[in-house]
Structures are given as C-alpha cells and as structure tokens.
Amino acid sequence: MHKKKCIIYVRVSTEEQTKGYSLNGQERIDREFAASLGYEVVKVFREEGISAKDLNRPQLQELIKWTRENVSNVDALIFYKWERISRGTEYDYAVLGKFFEECKITPLSVTECNEDSPEGELLRWITKGTALYERRKISQRTTMGMDQKAREGIRPGKAPIGYLNFTNPDNTKIIIVDPINSQYIKKAFELYATGNYSLKRLGDTLYLDGFKHPKTGEKYPPRKFEWMLKNSFYIGKLPYKGMIYEGVHEPLISKELFYEVQSMFGWKKPKTHDIFFPYTNMIKCECCGKHKLSAEMKRGAHNSGEYIYYRCKCGCKAIKQEDLEKTFIDMLDDIYIPPKEIELMKDEAREILQAIKDYENSIENPVEIQKKIEQIKDRIKKSYQDKLDGNLPYGMSEKDWNEMMASWASELNQLEIRLEERKQKSKILYNKLSLIMAFCNQLPELFRLATPQQKREIIQTCVRTLSYNGETLKIELFPVFYKMKYWKNVKNGAPDGIRTHAYRNHNPRS
Image (cartoon, rainbow, N blue to C red):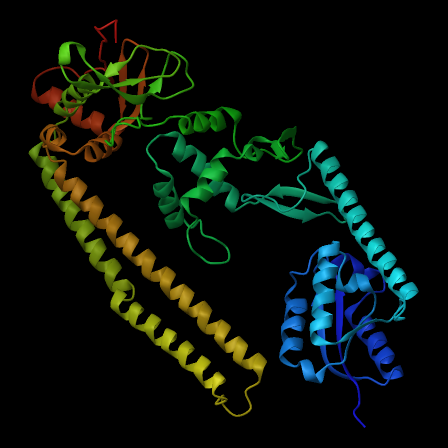
C-alpha cells in the first residue's frame, strides 16, 4: 500500500520566538500531526526571522520549486497555522491556491479547520482574513511607534555611518558616537569645505587614511559621500518622512560647517560650456561670509569674445579669471629659492628617492602579490569543481569546506587591498618628488603654460586661503612660501613684504 508523503513548512519572525512559535516547537507538533494522519515526512523547510507579509521568502520559494520538481512524491503540505504560510493579500492566497492545485497537494493546518466543505472553506477564509488584519495592525503599531520615536528625537532603525546603535542595561536603545568612524566623517566635511576636493578625490583620500567599508574593505563610492555630506543628522537634526526633528544624539559637526558644505552643492556649471573652471569654490566671499565664488561665462561687448567671471550668489561684484591669473602670476613671481636651498632640496629629493626604494624593498613586489591573487583564485575555482564532482578530501565535512572557502576569500580580499594600497602609496611618493623638483624657480612659467586643472593644483599647493570682498582679493600663502618670498625680497634689497597679495577691482560694472 502506498504511504502518503508530506512536506513541512515552519516559520518564525524574531519577535515570535518568545510567543511559543519556535521552529523546533512547530516542527515537533507538525510531525506529530503528520504521524496521526499516516503521512511520512520527506522534507522540512525552515524559515527563520522573516515576516509573512508576502511570498518572497527564500525557503518558501525553495519549497515551491522543490515541490514542482518532486510533484509525484508529495501529497500534502503541513504547517502550524495559515499565518505561518502567509499574512498577505488575497492575491498571495490565490497564488498559493493555484500552486496547490497544479501540484495536487493538500494544505493542512495543525490548529485550524481542514474540512473539505463550504463551511470549512468559509472558516479558512475567516482565518486568512484575520491573519491579514493582524499583520496590518502590527504594521500600524510599528509605524506609530517609529513615528513617536522620531518626534522624541530618537532615530528608529540603524544609525548612520559615524554613529553606533547601543542598548543600555535597562534595555533602552540609543545612538552613540562611533569613536573611529566619526573622525572620518568630520574630516570629510572639513576637506570638502575647502573646495579643493571632488567627491571621488575625497573618497580616495579618506580610503588611504583608513576609511573603508567594514564588510568589503573597499572605499566608499562618491554617491555615498554625497549622502553623508547632505545628511543633517550630523548636526543633531533627525530627518524622517519629510520632517526634520531635533535629535537627542550628539552632533558631529557644527551647523556653520554643514551649511558651508551645502552651499557648495548648490553651484552648477553652465550647461552650454564643456570647460573646466580652475578656481570655482576656492575663493571665499567676504561680503556674505557664507559662500564661495562660482564661475560663469559671459560674452563681452561688441563681439569682444567670451570671458570667465567668478562671483558669489549674494550679489557681490564679479572678478575676471584673467585678472585672477595676473594676480597669481605676480604672487608666484615673488617666490624665489636661493641656489643653496635648491641644493638642499636636491638632497631632500635624494632622500625621497631612497625612501621610495626602501619602501618598495620593505613590501611585496606587486607582481608577487598579483601572482598570489591568481593562485588563490585558481584554488577556489578548483575546489568548487571538486565539490561539484564529489571529489572532496576524505573526511572533509560541508562545514569544513565552507570554512576553508571563507578563509581563502578573506585572504584574497586582503591581498587585493594591499595591492591597491601599494599602488597608491608609490604614486604619492613619486608625485611629491616631481612637485619638489618642478618648484625650483619655475613657478610663474609653469603656471602660464599649465592646463586649467594644473593651475588649480599649483594654487592649492601654494595658497592656504583665498577671499574676496568685491574690491580686493586676499591671498594667504602657506608658511614655506612666505620664506621663499622673504628670500626674494632680500635678494632685491627690499624689506619683507606684507603677507597678502591684493587685487583691486577697477570695473564697477562687472
């Protein structure tokens, strides 16, 4: 006589484990129920920590797939209650009904009516409707609880980067400052506020400083930095569902710095010109004290050509790019390095070359690192093939194999990170060497011949701050360049000059 066969489905969401719905408890009751009806259990599907709001659950989808492939070997599906299968809409139940009909299997609830009659079907629909009602009430209560938390200034859910979720001894949940990542968030705002960093360059810089994705070890993408820099959570605010609440968490940055960064996101390059504006967002406006000058292109009178101007959106008088560059050339022309200092710089250059050599000798050759990466990739590929062919070493369990693969994957990830870091560090050292050698009394000529991007880099190298009040451009150099300026004045027999260059705006109509 053919013995009837069944499969079992058990499910819990996290909060239900404390209400008597544990997976083991459900499976035990389901097996006892199957035995009482004369069914042989051929497979059990266990779903842990997942809601039944829809049918997109890994184990339920696996159950449906497996049943269709073994349709002749299954007569029934046994579960504790209908809500274990679904708390979804009528559409979900229609999909399940079609699946049961196609596979010719009987759904059997341990605790509810299974009678094949109009009354039994009515009771089942009442049960399903009750489950849907309960799910919606749970969702409503959860939403109300999260909304109330937000009104009280407590962020519901996971803390953003720079903060940590923390549970107090009394089981209350709060958000605290992450002592490690918070430093990177602060630095991101400070660097971006200078106007010298794109989102990509910001990511590259902080990656080299150690700011890496905790799971992948990779650097954060530019879009993630844009989200961070626009998130008012970092100044103590709590954005939630289109509203802004006062948060109870500790701010990471000042409001002044935050709004300075936001003002920089407001600038847009002219849509009709695909050119690079070298000094945009570099010059602070003294008229309003809030924004930095942005570039725009205008056509001169009587077909005299196009001119690039820099102006603040507060309405301060504009300044021409050609006048800016004349001032910068005069500033660079003041910089002088005596022959004795050049020899010292050559010595420093030799030290840097030696540092590069020592550094490269102290670490693995990139070719060797790449060779190890390829070896591990081949090892992983071969191991997968051996598993598929059933050729695993004698006595190795599934758990042992998974642990071995995880170890190889981790080693591969670390090697790839080391290879990238090695490339970046070598590049920085060589760039520093090139910069030192190029600065030997050739800055004005270098600046005149430079591309717009190179001009920006030269000014960023020499200048600490730039500000403009509608009449005068003020330039503060880095200390080392004041020393070079002093040498130039001494050479020319003049006293040490003032510490700022000034450009007077003589065109009031600009």
